[in-house]
Amino acid sequence: MPETAEKIITVILATNNPDKVKELRPLLENISPLLKVFTLKELGVDIDIEETEETLDGNARLKARAIFNLLSDRFPFLIALADDTGLEVMALNGAPGVYSARFAPMPEGKTPSYQDNVEYLLNCMKGIADRKASFRTVIALKGRIPSGNGSCQFENTSQRVVSGSITIEKQGSEGFGYDPIFLLHSTGKTYAEMSLAEKNKLSHRSLAVQKAIIDLKKILDKQGIPLTDTPTFP
Ligand code: IMP
Image 1: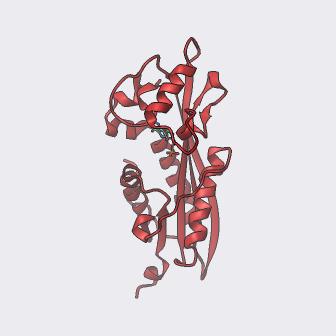
Image 2: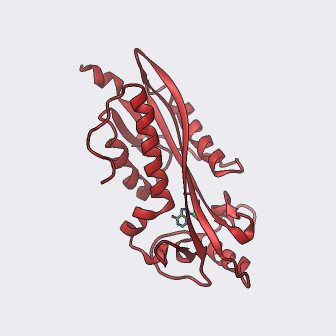
């Protein structure tokens, strides 16, 4: 067996969202020939991690640590990757923020739909002139990677924010979540008025992913782990 085969690093995505997996897998596998990317489902893991922290950073770290601890015994070298995203509205003091998925009040035990959250936010913003808002994504990595003849552990978070505003009413039919009411300043369009390809080039999540990949390359490079020569981003 070649020496490198013993040093395969299993990257575990703490998501089963097919869109996120489609975006992340090629980017991560392009970093180093040693990285092999799996979803929880592909590893036969069915787990629902409760997001109990009060910040996006806290929740992203919590999820990455939980996956790392769960699978630490199964892989000599592994990296768990988790993300958390929130919409922060200035006039609402940063709400819904970390509670973006659960913003609209619902009867006990029910989770609001995207539609419930959008309608509720538009209602909260009725008559408010300052509509500035931003989307923030935090990506957490928790890993154990080869170092000399042994291994070392690391934890890292990367975040990116994009600025925009909340529209008066829904515009566009693409995307999900708050896309129809988030107007991205750099384009003058809501996310829901963009194709997936266009959104993926400039969204909060894609910028955070790009930053996480730059950070991860530096972490791997520091331990002398071979990087793929081809650029990750054209
Ligand atoms: P998550 O951390 O990616 O699960 O995102 C939490 C919540 O933020 C989701 O339930 C959505 O309501 C919202 N959200 C996250 N990303 C986006 C996006 O790209 N567009 C619109 N809403 C989003």
